[in-house]
Image (cartoon, rainbow, N blue to C red):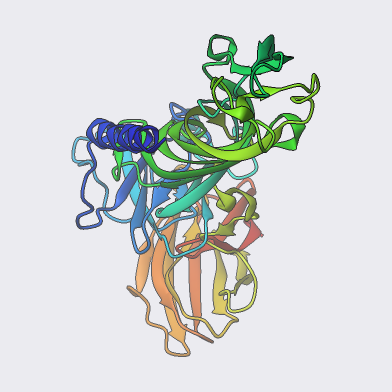
Length: 450
């Protein structure tokens, strides 16, 4: 029995060494940002698989094949990754915006990237989708915390802790001293050739693994250091599984290791395969009718699959939004449009008034507005600021895409002066929008001219 236990221990050690060699485990170095790229022309799927990030690791999302003159996004767009010096036409869709930055803390969350049309020019129509409220919907990325996690799985197992097979063989034995006749009865024999080599069963498994694709992993195969399982067999015999294994993809596991469970044994006072021992012979034909049990160790191999998603983090929804659009402490702003001068002598003036109505500063706020568009029509805009705000510049020509810091209680007034070529131009419905680095804060509409 001692040699059998040593053999099981050696088997487990060999399996662990092989798994370490297969995984090619890598050490964790400096956290590099995770970069994800979507194409605005529709070449990328709406959703991607789960992204695992370590605590403090940044996730940068880029959108390619877009045009910032036609679209704005609900993220912070910084310097374009690709040069745009070769743009010879106004609406070529070759720009890349990003990154839209997020950072992993502790809880899982979801990143949503959505385009907003800011230009009604017909040339903008061919190049974009993912428009707010349109089809297909926005891009979504689920980000899970990188680290140690567990998965609950159902498993099929095969182990060597099998039941022995005993039987009674009729015969005679000299029980009383000669010249007394021999006593008729039964010799107890173990029939090893009739025993199962492996015992098949089912178990509930818990796997402990690391979610990082670069830690204890090789491509899509990862080492699972510890797995524990509980199985119930015939006659409610409980088996305990403790092993190590590998994970293929997110849900399939192959596990091996020792198993401990109950097996049948002879009733007390009986032995097998020993005719010289008085306990190896019995006159009771029902001596084996009530078998005993004992604990035995063995070796198992199991395959398991998790149906409910990997780890308890799959049950912690709903996910926290990276860019919350409301709630306590969320920035809010208003946008009001009023006419300061109705059309007179081919000139109309109106004001766009942006106010921060919260106690939260809104850095990198933006006012996006496409002015009246017709041949020969010109629009000039002046900016004034109150409440600690500062205009990025005093005057603008044409469409507005102005970025500024919107401090608490700050107020910006943009007065647009539009000069027409005749006294009765056709009316156009115009829209102005205030954006933060994360979301749309306010919008308003005006009909020009009035």
